[in-house]
Length: 206
Image (cartoon, one colour):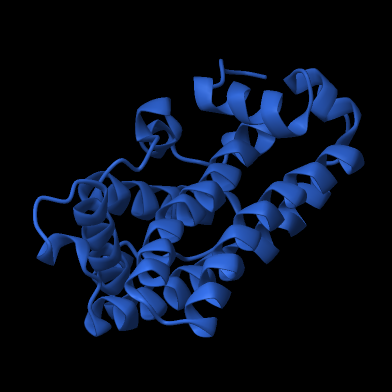
């Protein structure tokens, strides 16, 4: 490690990857499997909420669906942010003025405003690592705006002040679906190139 990793990296490793960063470097294949298991856990919760809504479209299942989306987004972003710290050569690919995007102050996505910055900055930073051209204006895309509306609805559900604020409209469900599809498309588009770069970095970290 050429730089001290942010606290969220240590927490991610402790919870899902192993005891420390050295363990990760020495047991790469095993730990990559655990990292992917973490992603599967994120997807499993989202899939469960989606299935419940499809089975029975009620206000209760709508609220569960909306609340499930932000943690799913945050989990996948956490995976992306951890990767460069686990492979120091990858961290060097990120311009110094962009490396701040991986500081622990970027977590968690507590509200719509911080979520927008976190999504944009993480994808831009990982785009540098994976040699992907991520457009700097990606958060202006329709899918991104739909996802941000979902975060706004989630915020209202987490802090309800009226009956209206506790109801999930048809528009909110449509936006959530569009936002989830957009984020998944962005994630998959960067994930494959990133994994190719990781595979090239399998030499032991010295």
